[in-house]
Image 1 (cartoon, rainbow, N blue to C red):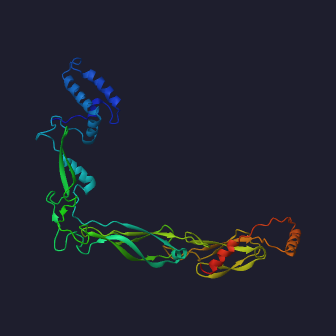
Image 2: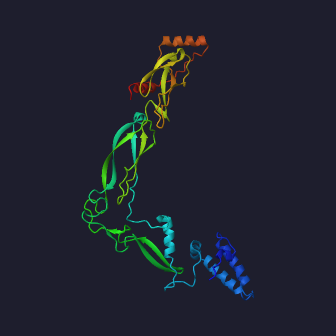
Image 3: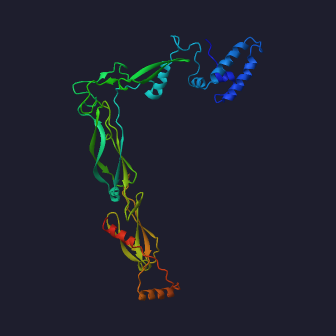
Length: 377
């Protein structure tokens, strides 16, 4: 039998054509090939071809089916053994997309366990220097009593008599386009392909149990906020002998009162008096590990940064450490005696500066934060 032409080609429209475009094209071609008007030998055949194409494409349901599956022999309809069996074709399509390479997934095959995620909050310095700790996580594990098959010790799961172990049932439906075979999970065994007549008393047939498990975790030095640590095989247990999933630990780092972190570098702010900034001084600076001396040159301006090389965070991937950047802030005194004020007026007069006092408030919080940093807090 000669193959049929594409219905869209017959009507001379594209596959994206609207219902109105299809109707217009049909009316034009129907008038052109109507046997009462066109006396050509093939006019009647072409008229029937146009009408058949329009009957399908003008119906939303039929058009959708045609777009998906193409031509179906109209002489093979509902009922009887003459219906066209789409079972194998649909099975191949579904298996191709969901079963992998055209094969069906074995419901009794080993199955990998689920991955788990755990959020751990650590102190600022714990993230910098690393730590070893222990966490407790709830997870499912393979049942020790039945070793994961869900059956009472001394018994075994039996092959489902309904689906013969495939885990699927076939449902046959007759449609105007032929006989269609759909597959669905077996209702007798819930798609597992097995039936457990005597269930394990520990897991009640599930093959897995919920447990609280303690896990030792090593936080590497230099880890930053938002980092993930993967622990292979520490997720939930697999099914039917399948491997366990993985555990992903998400790190959240608490902020520090004195230090701030940007990548592998550390930033801090220290106060300077007006005299120290003007004349220069040697001051003590707290770092992550020790206290060091920093020489401040005379004439230092507020907001100046000094770099302490190698006093930052250990590099997580590689060698060495970042730097520490020290910002100095000049603090204006607020409690002056009259003699001190007079001396400053004289100093301002010598420099030609205005002696109008516009004192700024002293931020004692900077000193407090620095004191705590010295104490290693």
